[in-house]
Image 1 (cartoon, rainbow, N blue to C red):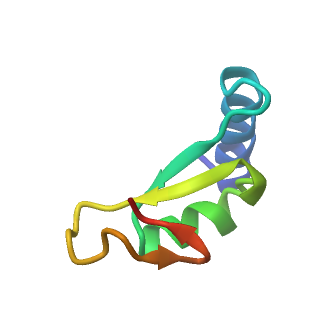
Image 2 (spheres, rainbow, N blue to C red):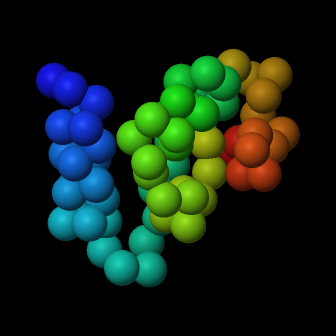
Image 3 (cartoon, rainbow, N blue to C red):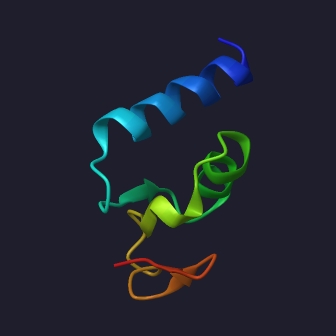
Length: 68
């Protein structure tokens, strides 16, 4: 798929499946997470936190979002 197709698909999923007033978490407090935000144009207002499997990142912030 082309990048523009992926953007449309992700935007559609967020608009149709995430109820208004609800937020999402993004997997990857690193390169993948920032790529998801920028390449796929995920609205930062919809992001509540980043999720990461590295316990050294837990309790920190990434791009001003918490990593629980």
